[in-house]
Image (cartoon, rainbow, N blue to C red; front, side):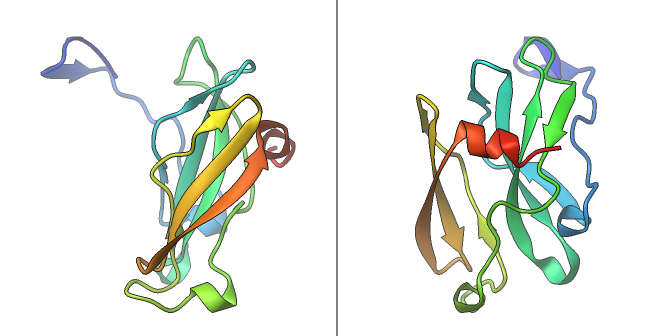
Length: 130
């Protein structure tokens, strides 16, 4: 959306909608976008059947963030067998990921019971997209 007044927003458009089974119920961002040389890298969490939450990523145009370019067709992080039980079972989610150079550290919550970390690179995330 756009605004000249932080209390009034207009012209909102859908940028990323559920496309794949792992995000069929809903898809949302995981924290702020990460600015990279190519465009904006956005981590997402998708909700699939039986309320399974998993983490994916998408790339949107830097000069026009209403234009998605690519996204991961399957989750980059999903609950493993030993991460399924907890206060809220079958979920992993993140509230953002810092990037230093081309390295990305993804802190994520597991079953609302504990926090884990995944390390990857911008290049690996881009290679996983279609």
